[in-house]
Amino acid sequence: MKRMSALIMCSCLLTFVVSSVFSGEVTDLSKKAATLTIGMPRQNVINLLGNPSWAVIPADKGDFHLSSTRVILGLYWKNTPCSPVVVDFDNAYKVIGWDEGRALCGDDAQLYEPSEEYSCSKKDRYELCK
Image 1 (cartoon, helix red, strand yellow):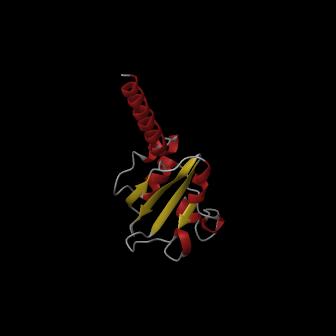
Image 2 (cartoon, rainbow, N blue to C red):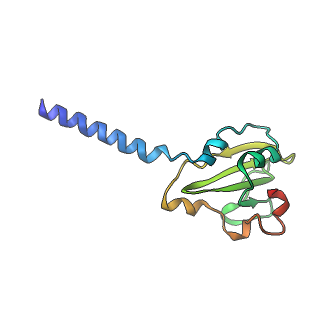
Image 3 (cartoon, helix red, strand yellow):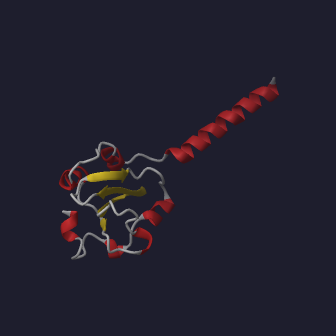
């Protein structure tokens, strides 16, 4: 009987740990991103989430390139302590997909943030972020 109780306790503890690791933290920004809809205009997204931190455009190469020809713009929002919220837009600047930034929270989340070269403060991206 003791062995069965210990086994059940270990199983419950393992389930809790695994679910905690993979559940992700929910930030206020992630909660707002959860209300996005396909076809939403870029300006409505910015009104909802605030000004983005980074913009990825078709000319970009490297880790933060646009992997689909349907995506003409990717906007990223800093989402501390989690990975960025990312919204992809088509050529009419309508939402075609997004990531709520819940997948990874903690120290490694900053690894998923674009570098300064993608900053919305850069001249070639500034207007896309407003």
